[in-house]
Image (tube, rainbow, N blue to C red; front, top):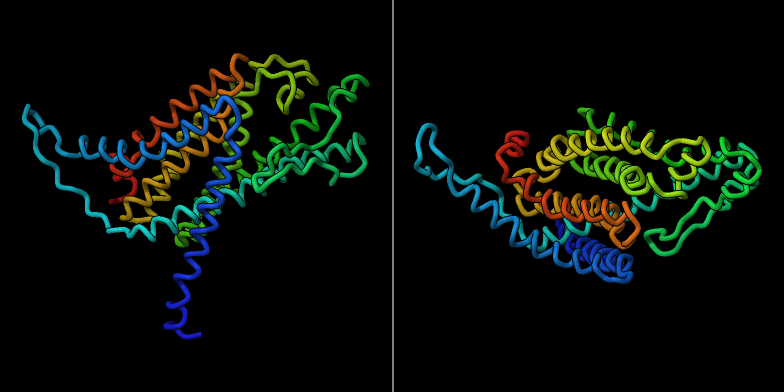
Length: 331
């Protein structure tokens, strides 16, 4: 196939990508439409916030700067960015949604199968593939299908704790691998490889951080079973996990996100806005913010509320127009 024929077929492929991406985005909103409907409403409000409010704040903040030793305002020359067509923006949104969906699907099954395989090795179940596979494209209600209560009743609390820890451990290992890979020159020279590894790292991290941040005080789920099995205080997991998680969040938003701006979408401001909005949406709404639906169970809903606040604050603080971000991207 010559270059002219490839060029003619490109819009068709892009149209298919856009259709798939927008469908997955619609399905994503369907997943979070549980009563009392506050999460989908916040999600919908987040869209105009990112389209109009964040750029308006940026224009206000970047309209001028204070002269050194002076009280007058000196206009600052605008940063030059390439123009990005709406069609290309839609393609980029769709690629981002498709990337997240596939990786979320793979990471969640890696997590649950890690529980199940360790349970099989320790004699807690016979078939490692016997898990609850969930439903839909986001594997909703997926579970390792291990009877932890039977293990606790049989006095096998340590076994239950080991099985419960296997899932988070797989996330930690994958995070370490992706963090090492994303620093390689080979990866940094290939934008879409960087994009894929970036989202793999992001998904595997936020899955475990959400557990630490919102579920450490629960009596079930992974950390509840670990604490019950080993007789640990919830703070033994929550405090060190929170500290480490905040350090990684700082690393992601101050190093990897600007790196994504520079490597994947250099000088394409609309796509950079989409990137930080997408990361914020996934981290602070889809994972952490959903916990607000646990009201009045404290502290779950409270941590969910913190996530929703971070949802709107982060795109402003890590906007591609912030000076510190531009210094890291070289733009």
